[in-house]
Image (cartoon, rainbow, N blue to C red):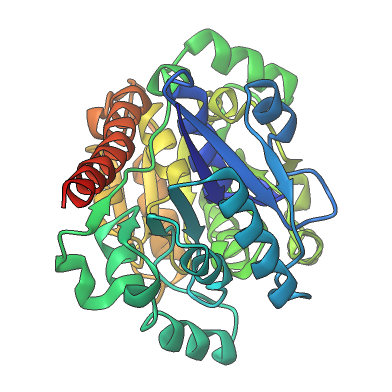
Length: 375
């Protein structure tokens, strides 16, 4: 069995967490097992499930507070457990401590995996990202990304290297197969009339997801179609700000804040259109999920074209006024729902590809080792 040390899982559900758990649930654990590091005081997302499935969780120092101690902790884990592959899942190059630790520990394969295409965390972090990404070729052996755009932002010209791979953000497409009965059931549970237009969004309440602008778009929809509801799924630091904005605009009774949910696939059945006005994304899993369930999908032009998967997907520039967004959404109002099967993002085929990629890396290492021993 190949044990791989996965870095980057947090205690908050987001894109990286969903990516990792989707692959973890489907990977052949008789061949490959994922282990994880935890820098938080809380349990990791899905920690109980991971441990029940044989994955190890190592508690290490928080690199935000104790970077040197963190590096020492990770070096010890890699060396004591002989990890040949260390997979570093990253939203930016600001914190490259996992790569540094893996390099010092002489891990044979160090994967820098870009899950984002920009950052909104201030000028200092943007400068740090631009500086630190220059060190990645000296620290990582492999460059992975969720999209071309995310790869270019992270690795610059190195996307042309043979070390670069796109690893798709994959989902279980069967979970998102449209079901009219589920739609009716969920709408009843949420007290939404069948003739209501339901706009949906899934995402953490932070600056990146641009909820403020989404509220303004929804306000424009209400002016034209008063029987409309906005479903907001997720938590985050800006949630109270968005609730206050909705209250100030007097549209709060038209918005349902659902918090974290583990039935997003079913909630999508109740929606009529999915809107994602993000300032940036890598390749958003929720976009794949929404279109797999047959939802019309409207997103910002800052998101990679690779997310446009169905005939009812549209990109609009964020410089456009909210009414233009509202008009495009309302055009999709009477689209007949039908599930989509995107083989490229099917978790089963994508997991087989990932398994083979890991196995080929280990096979390549063993071949080199044999050659060196002969010499």
